[in-house]
Amino acid sequence: MNDTNEHLLSPARQLTDDEQKLIWHKPLSHKVSEEERRISNEIKRNWNRGEMKIANILLEGDAGSGKTQLAKALSANFGLPYTKVTCFADMDKSDIIGAILPVLSSDRLETMEPMEQTVLKALYDSSGFQSITEILMDVMGVTQEQAAIQMRKLLQQIKENSEGDEVEYRFYPSEIVRAYRQGYLLEIQEPTVIRDAAVLMALNSALELDGSINLPTEIIRRHPDFIAVITTNRSYTGTRPLNEALRDRVQHTEKMDLPTKEIMMERAMAKTGYKDENVLGVLADIIMILDKTARANAIKGVAGMRSFFYWVDAVAGGTSAKESLYHKVIYKITTDSEEIKILEEALQKHGLFASLEEIQFEVKKNENLAIH
Image (cartoon, rainbow, N blue to C red; front, side, top):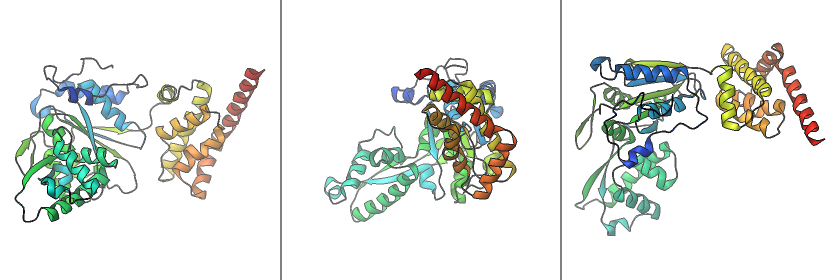
């Protein structure tokens, strides 16, 4: 499945140049999964079926199981601009809808701190294409959560600096509002961490197929092309079960686990350029056994694709596979001695430590032959 017209949802829609740049383009390393095929076919099939339309997707699974990659691949397949919001515990309604800011006079602006001046000038000069959070992230070089905190501080500072003045007010939308109004594919990462019930209620209301968002300036309706892809980790520290009302608004869910051994190897080859299938096969087997063992023993950490890629990359760079197993994989799962012992015993039982020794011996032998 390439970036073809097969799954385009609105072929007649005219996107701006900026919107075109937001459509994800699949790298050569991208491997189409069964989940991608299934979701793309289901959404395309139901797109014009009224109440049967599928436009809210849930991808639930382990860290590193490819949820964000899949969300981006759907952007490519559907021809929709991709954007995302990363949720955090203290999100409030301004993070969902955006904020109203007064436009300060140049005299007032000069009384503020240099960084605040820079941020406000960037906001005043913005075309409205970027969200307020995105502008703060770009100017200040901070994360989405830090940008939200800075925005609240900035609002307080502006309030203090504009008291008694007659000022013009301007509304700056959130990333969610921008995607919702313009009809983008929005990845909502980890809504399970949100603590404020009012924020979840606002999200629930917006995700109705005929939903709307009440802004301070207007009520906006859900764009017919808007797709929400909710991505959340299973058994992740700080998360709660997904809000039932939010889950109820989802029309299609995928359980995201580690891919098959063959796909793991293919992706690792594409990511790292390392081609030794014998070594890759042993490393993939180890990741899969560790993943299974951690689950069976309620060990909180995850042996996922990210660990696999970094481990393969270390081995490709000449590091010992056995030594880097600990630094790239096991210690990422846990540093508890008892839990490490459980993981080691599982590898021993499946003969995988012996397999590691064998591939290490083969690698050294091949290196020596290359030298001589």
